[in-house]
Image (cartoon, rainbow, N blue to C red):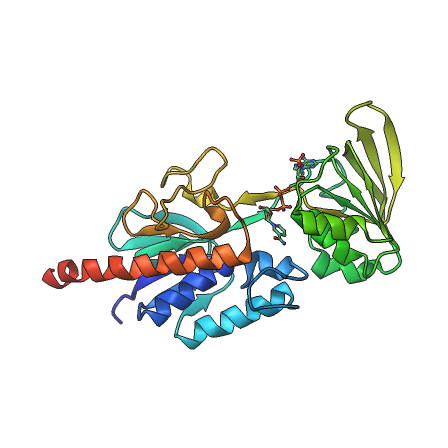
Length: 316
Ligand code: NAP
């Protein structure tokens, strides 16, 4: 059987990858998306998306399902449980190898492997993960009916998911290392005006304590006074930022000091035929809508790139 060479191979099936997949396959490119986990990326762990135009009152998973169905309708293939391990981006065709040992070839590559939740890095976090320590309110919130919860972080994820958790919890206490939140103002106000919430300012978590049954308390330290205290709770949700999934790209293309792939406004990286889209990129706004937009632009430029290659390939 002749070897398949895809026109466009997309790494990651979050909103950036699905947006790219829709535009590339609708633009007649033979397109494959490789996804290491499940389709949807950060959408799968987001309770409600209220700033994706036209998609009101929808959960992250609902939007993800709609995007996946629409992308597949135009013939895009999606392979899940395919973790990319090695890339040869300078070659033509480009070669992508997964941890499972599968090798894929493509004329263009769109990197949209997104980011994953940063760990707090304190004792007890790893041991109690899944036993009261969580990074996903939409996945685990319902296990905490009438429980006292803590949320760590001061960004939009912490306050948005903290507000969601009030549906279940008896109380939700946000613990933030500074005296000011960086979350979007509308999300801050919603959280702060909820009767079930409060905030412990200027405080870091030093340890997560627990037993066989799960989390029992947090050891806290005030970052201004140095005073230590114990905060009893039955669950802790950690939202201290996202780290880009670029491990497999080290030394392969230009990445900035924060580990983000550097692109121009056409989503082109420093390697011809290789594009990046969404959270993996050095972008000033990380939203589902901007990720999908990045993906659609990357695919559109990729279509032009494939067309420009055709006379060369035919000559061989
Ligand atoms: P983020 O904006 O990077 O915020 C991370 C928060 O965690 C910050 O408040 C930071 O404190 C704190 N933090 C970091 N390391 C810490 C540590 N070791 N110990 C304690 N606290 C620590 O991350 P995010 O909230 O996950 O959001 C990621 C991106 O997605 C952002 O661009 C955000 O705007 C976007 N987002 C948007 C929406 C929305 O539009 N609805 C929802 C969610 C996320 P400092 O403030 O002191 O640095």
